[in-house]
Image 1 (tube, one colour):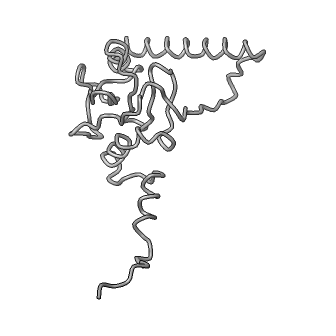
Image 2 (image 1 turned 180 degrees about the horizontal axis):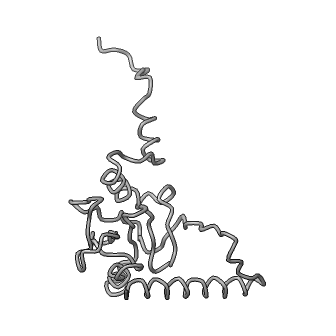
Image 3 (image 1 turned 90 degrees about the vertical axis):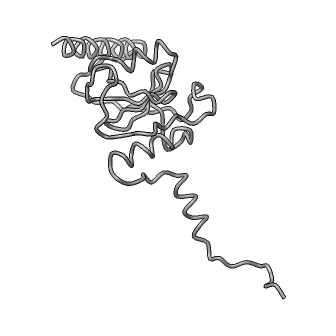
Length: 167
């Protein structure tokens, strides 16, 4: 269908962009070789604000425009929209509204549409509330994030105090 054709076109465009970037480095694209994707540990589009966590977050969420099941959550307004490999409603929303950051409910990855990069949820605290809520909706438990380990360690102290008991 149309969506499959768009996905193939996107894959070809991605492949061409990767080949061009490698050519600038004096290298060639090797279809048999893998490559690593390194998420950014900072994003200027967050502007220090935590992402919006929708009141209703479900692993079974559907695109609010076309009811497609492969959805993203807009980190700025909480809209639930389909991926660029379906009907592209999240990508269109990001461009039209200038809402830079979204999270895929498929793999819980977080992407900045303006940086054109994945973002590291373990290193960027503003991403963690949305990621945690989505992880809990999808798997029934909160994820183990650095901030939760720090909080747990702080709460599990010996309880001793140097203060003298009241007399």
